[in-house]
Image (cartoon, rainbow, N blue to C red; front, side, top):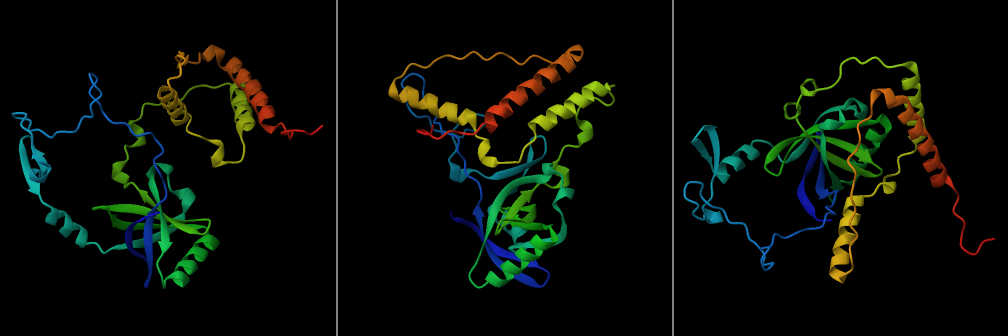
Length: 272
């Protein structure tokens, strides 16, 4: 893993030098755009809106449209000066229970690796957070913008989870949802039963990206010249209210069958 950013966790009067490293990787296949006539690769060309004339990358500037057709131009020094007003630290503001933070606020995780000489301070903060069960809410400047962030402990690693600010979230009130719908006790009971049937311990390796797997298999088949079967997928049918209990009962029976298959012990080859 390469270092993305170097700085320090600011914890009261204590500074803990750390390196920020990627915690995720993009597993999706990469595609190039090609000309459909002869499969020649296509490159992106930036053109002026007014006359479609191409513009070199080095000639581009960033403009903020404060009213239609009127821009204020921002250069790299403007962005640097704003960033320099905030120190190169992860400034811890509060310690809170992680359960208090709505999952919508979390954006992207990064690993915080210790820099030489900061092992004791890193270990102290890590152990204190483990024992209190708290996560730290912090602010930091990362990749030319300020972020809200959570510092949490996962195993023996401190993780920086970049967060969204409150005004970046669209309020829940703007989502069209049913307010009050009368439900029968039988419907509620069966819904609880289905949830119970599908409840298990969270094991991340059980969940795979089936779309990526199928896509890569299709790519391999095309490379090898194999025939590709066509699959027609039916559109999901909406559940009718009158059919809700029957659908729940069928779902419970199916979940019971799937759980039985999943929990069936595997017999080693050659055993009698």
